[in-house]
Length: 156
Image (cartoon, rainbow, N blue to C red; front, top):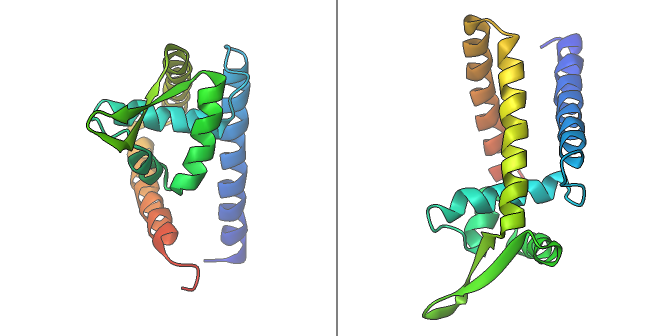
């Protein structure tokens, strides 16, 4: 890889990531989710996705988000206080805590999903079928790279 390629790839990762976050924050602040951060929206998304398969325990949600349960606990406490999530014990085993979206949480999660759907449709519309296929192949490889990188211990 040349130095120019390295610089461009680094710029792309940082710039595009920040642009997506900025667009997401702007889009959602205009539709009634002003009190939610993007990270909080992603917690709501994970809870919504995992509830359907009854995999909505704190540990399962933290695993899906690749965060520690302690970090999730802080986020869940905030989202419960804001009225987006509710917690409940598992019948027969009070040690298992399930997290669910409230109606307010379901609405915010739906708005977030609509933003993503519009973003994906708009981006895909600018590419030919061949370009889209090539992009998706490349993104799958990058996803695997970042997944593997995240699994490495800090001492590696």
